[in-house]
Length: 251
Image 1 (cartoon, rainbow, N blue to C red):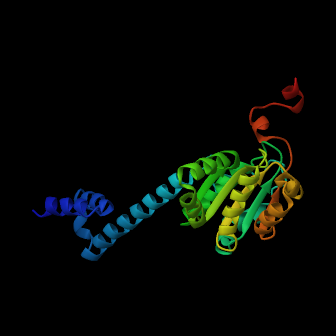
Image 2: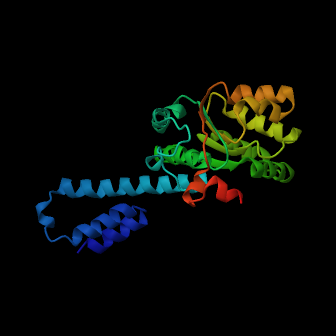
Image 3: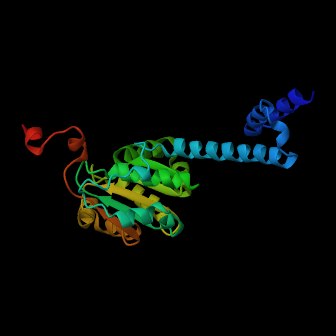
């Protein structure tokens, strides 16, 4: 007779996992075989599981990852110079605890963004916050934020995020404002949080790409010297999935 009031109270308290678990228990034909402690344990376990899942879904929504990738699906068969042992080490998330960076470089189509998203997805699953940022769009967003007063709030948000993924580094030229913005983001994170960067440009050319020597030195000092490097090569995986050969695609 107390069934419905209990269910209602669980919903009022936002204990939706326990609410669903209790409803399922009441439909069980062998409910009497469970002790009170066993039934309570099942209710608490369901609530904890659903809360953890909601937190994960929130972290993934906030991360805005470009591709639905996960480390368990990494393709090691494609010849692109991917170090399996290093990837497995990175998948443990120790680099996040050590506040180290990751730099993934290589030509277009070898899976840089996919691998970066897979690592960010794993970070979210492990309880860390992450955020995908494409550098050309980031530059535009920061310029708009500076104009409408959101600039410092945006920087604080980036500084709090456990893993920032900056994709397409080197794709567009940077002006002085963009270089200073990038330095601000990296300075806030240096030694405190991890940053993952993907680029078609080899790391050795980044100083020239950044242009202004003083800012370039400061940016690279905070980004490169405490980073794992994945240097990929080979033919585009997109081309391979489409069944195209290098000759056919150039015709």
